[in-house]
Length: 340
Image (spheres, rainbow, N blue to C red):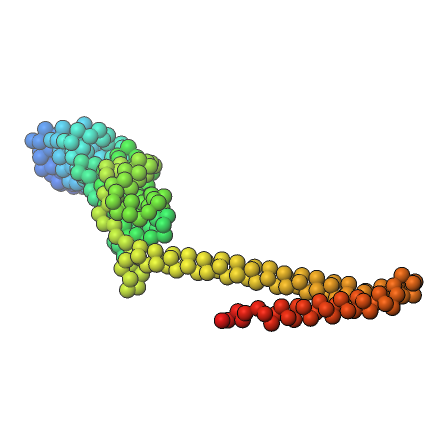
């Protein structure tokens, strides 16, 4: 009987020592929280965290920071977020920063953003202090410039700087910076493409900024576009030619020259064809005259056979023809030479 009592006493002592060791391991943490006016319960909170494999030191220190900053949260909320795989330190830091900046940010919203894989601290900082991103992204562009072509065919190189502010309400499910860069780039290219001349772009780059900014490019994104500034715009060179506008004008003039030459050649060909046609018609008329002249002897022979023409009439006609030919030859000799 005495041995049983001894064994039970030893077991009880061991249990008491274990409990004392557990209590002592969290006692300093409990005192620290109590002194910071962020009281926690030893058994239900601290020891319960150990049993649930949650580091009490990590949770309590974060809880103290939140309470001292004036936030209204509990250790249960922090523990639940930790068990879900989130960063309770980032959530509390973001909530403190948002509270100091008078930005409404609830714990559930901050926890959802953190669990979504977004950097909640950076998001709040960007919401307070907007950041500037380059368009296009220098890391993903070989030249670091956007290529755009105006209506007159001039190729321009453009670089823009976009100032954005985080929209915490759309951070979960909203598009990232890459979407903003892509949309702004598309808007700039479209705006330049609608310009009549590249000179208008060089004269009024702010018009492009206003047109792109008014297009609502930040819809369904995690950011609000504060401003779009055209940092650089220049005419793209072609080989060793820097003045592409002059080259284009020269090419256009050469093309107009070739077109006018082609039109003149076409008119000359038509005139030549018309001349050949008229010559063909003259030949046709001469053939008809010869054909008509060939009918005269036949008609005269018929007249002889029918008795309508006598031999003396034929001789008189021959004399008249000969006399007429002589007169024409004499008149040609009296005419002065045209070259004199």
